[in-house]
Length: 145
Image (cartoon, rainbow, N blue to C red; front, side):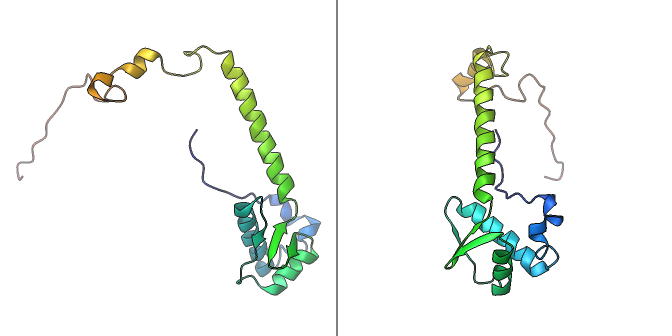
């Protein structure tokens, strides 16, 4: 599986969510919430520090809307633990289902290379066959060169 870039989820539903009534239409408050969400996701499961650049009025509005909980200079996003737990459980279930189904497959059926394919070219110190193997080589000479 390819490595994925880190991300945080923002659901479109915040546009009409009553908790965001005083937040969504205020660019400073919404930007503060998004920045805090990114920081909280990075710090999870620990609480995160409130950055100095966040306006105190935005922090107060987010607390009042019950979107964040503040303790000193640290905060937590309301509902983030539940969201992360839900994603984690979903990933665990998907992995368990995949491993369970892989047990019943043969090597050829699972898409895994056969043993003879992985050994080809090992005597030359290669991982596998060259992509140019079996193709005619064509040299191009630069007359100026």
